[in-house]
Image (cartoon, rainbow, N blue to C red):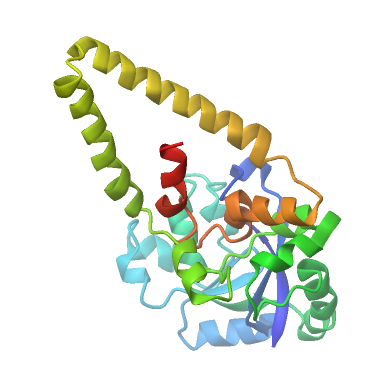
Length: 270
């Protein structure tokens, strides 16, 4: 029962400017009668932007208390979750990520959703084979790349980049590895400059601040004018996806949030 559903999300845009995106996922479809029947039987089901979520096991651990959550069982929580109801705050990205894990299906007509799923699947993937490594496929998307990469896949499982295990292993990086690698290097550089080069401490501080400002400016310009320029050639699209597009396509992937130090080390010595 593979269907595609429309979902608003708040990962890159504020709630006031949310855009509808198609999100492909494996799920069941239930109509309103089945939804009401399961709620009557005692299941803690709610509706959020067309999806059905099971809050069983979470009601007691809800930060705002189980009483307020139980008031919304069997109801559409979209406006409340987005902070559009009086007295209810807008929820964070972490809360959205936690809610998405509780999704069990979508609300709607089975026939309507099933009949449209094949067309939506084809239009979203443009012929890509998700069972294979993705990196050397994306370049073939051509003019469809921009549409594909900006239709987020909310799956939190790491996306397979390369078929070869060695390349795949070094393509993923946990966030904590970045400070683990670079903080000792930065500390050694500061110590070397101050103690061995006999540089005045005030000048060392100035160099640190200048380096920080330069890096932030460089990173902003690179992100704004290079990474947000969508190429059209095969290799241009491939490198764009590796450097930045993967974050847009699967923003919940925990291994693609930072740049791998193994690739950055040659730059640091160039």
